[in-house]
Length: 289
Picture 1: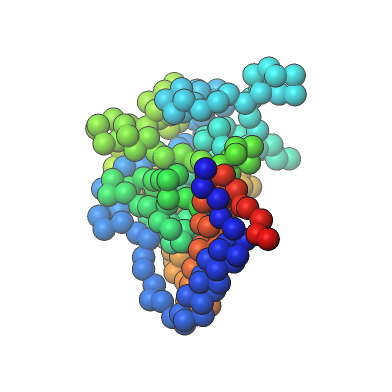
Picture 2: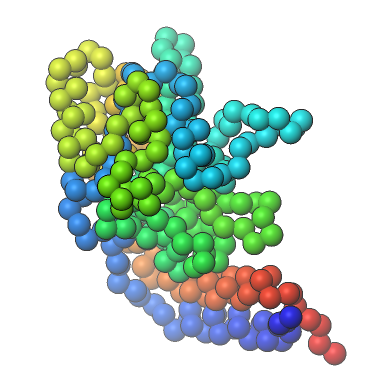
C-alpha cells in the first residue's frame, strides 16, 4: 500500500501555491463546442402537455442503472430533488392562481459554465452537444456545482471516493442515432428530442399557433447563451425555478471577473485536492518521526 508523509504532502501543496503565484493572466477559452449549436442534439419540454407521470425519471434510472431513492424505512420513494442517483425528475409548481409541472435535468448549455469552471476538464462539451463527465479526471473540488446557474451537478456524499453525477443527455444513445431515454419514454409528447435548431423552430411554431397558451418566450433559445434543453410554459419561468439570465453566456461573465486571480487559485487548489485524492485512493498518510 502506498502512503504519503505529511512532509511530502506539504511539498505538493507548496508546489501548487508556487505555481499559482507565478500566474497572473490566463486567456479565456470558450467552453462552447466547435459545431453549429443548431445541429446539437437537444430536447423540447412543453409544460402545458406534461401530466407529471415521471415516466422520464424511471426511463433515465433504468437506462443509466442508477440506484432508486429510498425513504427512511428503506422503501421506494419518489425523489423531490435531483441527486447523485436521480438525474431527472418532474416537480410540481403550485401558485395561487396556476399550477404546472416542470422537468429538472442538466440543461446542456451551448457554452456551459461547468465546463469552463472545471480545472481538470472532467466536464467537456461533446461534438454532438451533450455535456459529458469523466469521473477518472474529477478531483472532487465541486466547482461545477458552484458555477452551474441551474444547480444541476450533484455530489455522491456517501461514497468513499465520491464523484459528481448528472444527466448526460444519453450521449451513448445519441452516438448510436437514438434519442434520450426520457424523451422516448414520454407518453404524452411533452418531451421530444431532435436537432436544437429544429426544436427551436417547433417551439416558435407553437407560440405563433397558440399565443394565449404560453408565456411568449422559448426558454433556452438565448438564455445564458442558449441551452440544448428548451422549455415552453404557461407559467412564468422564474416561478418554475428557472433563473432569469441575459443572453450572454455565463462563462463569459465569470471569466472576465476571474481572469487575473482565479486561475492561480484554481491551479494551487487543484494540486492540493489532487494530492489529497491520491492519498485517499492509495491508503492514507503516514506520520513522520
